[in-house]
Length: 636
Ligand code: ACM
Image (cartoon, rainbow, N blue to C red; front, side):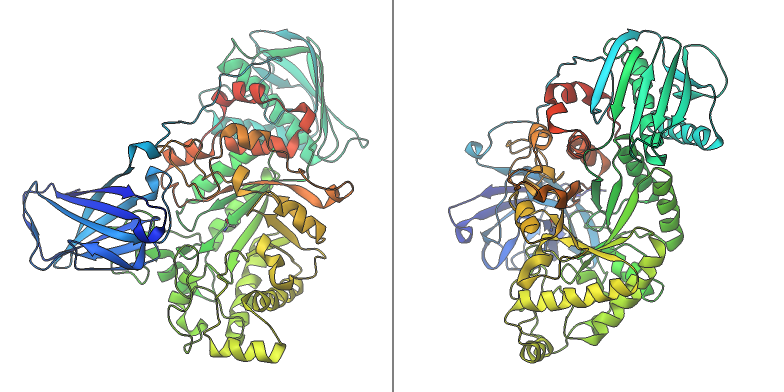
């Protein structure tokens, strides 16, 4: 039961040192609070050495703050303790940047604190909210992403299913799979495929044709029947998915969407890689939710799922050689080895996948033609690992000698210790067995430029190998990680910083360009294969309007659904270099996406904006059409 409410007001100044947070903790219980401390989590962090008013002291680990009131301070029932902190580590742009969760600790007893919206000066709020226009349909079909060629010349009403009139067992099995997919996503709509003739149905026939690409298909409609011609298994699944979408639209919104009676749809994807990334470290999503997200990707004909399984805030994947990773390494909260972060402060927050669950999820993805790219984020973002297995840190490294951008102290695996590579060999060996995909993603992002400089072991390595700075040490580390993966028959994928400090030989290396839009071109110019995923367009956690109350992060600016939709991933590429652009990816970071309501508000419809960028040629895209389709998109 909530017995305290924390209000927080943000007063920024031109410099972070002068920026100020004013807090008010109200006691809504019937008991006077005394001899207590307040803990709260907020991505808007107080700087070490910040000035306090009406508080005795504070400490902080990343987003977790603990504040001690002045000695003897009491809060009577209904009363309020006001205090202020001046001196912040970063800026706030939206209400969710403030305290998300907290607790009062009174004699060891933990009492939940409800954290109100972060408020700020009126002039800092533009009042803008997310806008998705009603849109306009030229063609009354519900299909997303839009196919390359749509030439439907006549429609019929009242139809909402197909009769699988003939076909091989593989074709019938594929139709059954898409039937099940459609029903999982939209149980309120009829199944799109029948295997026996009934009514309101068009006959469906199949035809495999080697001249079509493996992932290509053609749909030919007449009043009596539809024929699905496909290149390979992927094309068969995509053609069936499009038929299922047409049926879903015609049933769910018959005023807007119809069933084709004559004409052709001819289609294949623009890019081979149409990805979605999900961060399950900051906030865990269980097997059922991950499977549902895979269903949602399949519905949008997306074909890669990058699973961000580890980060500072928790390790989520069972590793038999290091069982504690999914015990203490997957848990945070009061009394745990890891303090609370990013919500759920007063309770123990935990979650991980067993290897059996991973195998089930991989099988589900495979059945939907989705490859899973597992991500183990190293060498940075490793607080959960280093807290769980402290022998992996250089004990002589000066504590707090560097901090990550998220505020974690000394959070990177040490490239000068052989234990590091032993650990990684064992971890990657299990991962290579679990995930059939040819790539493993090793992170490589956001290693602080001062990392390891206070580690005597790294200092020796730098002397020995003639490495000038942290980034060159990182490149040395990446080279060794790549050799480990090579021995396991896997190729290396990573974030764009893998190219820093001299990078690694680009042969077979795939990098995700995230920091800025120009990075896609820069990496391609260096010879890397690239997935375009700029934060400024394809990060699903960025707020969708400038208004203060709009949820989401703001470091990459405001990303409206239209911005995501209209972005052209090949912007700035020189002719001929486009072949290194392998595709696009939506990234779902979950610092702010702490429940499914927030997830849905942030991810949809932008996820399918990225799906359409990956599938549909630029000249075939149409924002008004896309907008008109959004009301029927599935959600988590
Ligand atoms: C990232 O957003 N740190 C890849």
